[in-house]
Image (cartoon, rainbow, N blue to C red; front, side, top):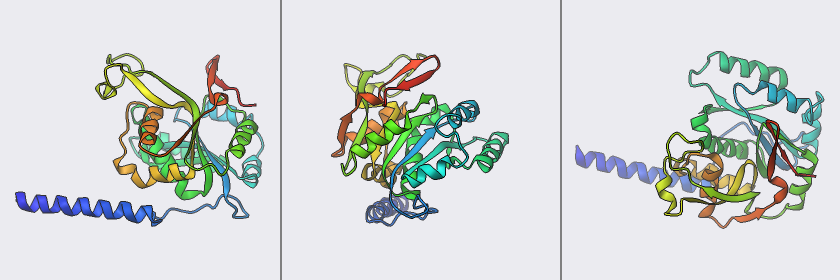
Amino acid sequence: MVLGCKDLERRIVEAEMELTLAKSQGYLRKQPQESGTSSGKKLLAVIGVYTGFGGRLRRNIIRGSWMSKADVLAKLEERGIVVRFVIGRSANRGDSLDRYIDEENHAMKDFLILDQHEEDQEELPKKAKFFFSTAVQMWDADFYVKVDDNIDLQLDGLIELLQSRQGQDSAYIGCMKSGEVVTEEGRPWYEPEWWKFGDQKSYFRHAAGSIFVLSRNLARYININSASLKAYAHDDTSVGSWMMGLQATYIDDSRLCCTYSGQDKVCSLA
C-alpha cells in the first residue's frame, strides 16, 4: 500500500507539471469567450469591482454615478473597457443570497459571478485568484483592475492612466506600501502566518488593496499557477507575494492612493 501510494503521488505530481506546462503554452481550460467588444478588438482593461451580498446599496450608488445610463456598459466596451461587479457564491449554494444576486444580474447584466469562489470575508484573499483567472480567460485585455466597491472611482482618470501605460509588459500598478504585520489574534488585520515575515514584522512592498492593476501577462501567470499560489490573510499582500518572484515592474502611482471621505474612499485620479 505504501509503495502504491507513493507511485500514485508521483503520477499526480507529474500530471500537475504537465498541466502547468500545457497552460503556459496556451492550452487553457475552456471558458465562454467574450472578446470584449462587439467589434472583437482587444480591450484596454477589465475592471472588476469587488462586491458582496450586502452591497446592493453600494452597487446602486456606483450605477447612479459612472454607470448611470442603461447603455453605459456597451458604450464603455466600445472604448475598450469592461466593467463588472465581482462576487462569489454563498456557502449554502443556491440559497436566497445566490438567488438575489442572480435576479439582480438578470436585470442589470453587470456581474462577473465566480461560481467556484465562496463569498466570505475569510475567503477574500482567494478571490483574487478566481477574479484574475476568470477575467483573463473571458476577455483579452491589456490590463486587469481590481477595485473595491466603496471607492468613488474617477473612471476617466483611470482610463487615462492605463492608456499611458499601454505596451508596458509585467506592469504591477498601485499605491505601493508596506506596513506592520499584526501578530495578535483578535486584532484587526491579524495575519495568522506572521512568523513568515521576519523579525521586523513588516510586509514586503505591495499595492494597497483598494485599487490595483495587473498587466495581461501577470494575470495569466496567476491563472496558470493558481493551484499552487499561497494566499495570506489579505488579498493585496497575497497578490504582492505572487509578484515578488516575477520580473514584475512595480509602478507606484500616488493617484491610486485613497483616503477616506465618510465611509467611502476617494482616489485622486484626475
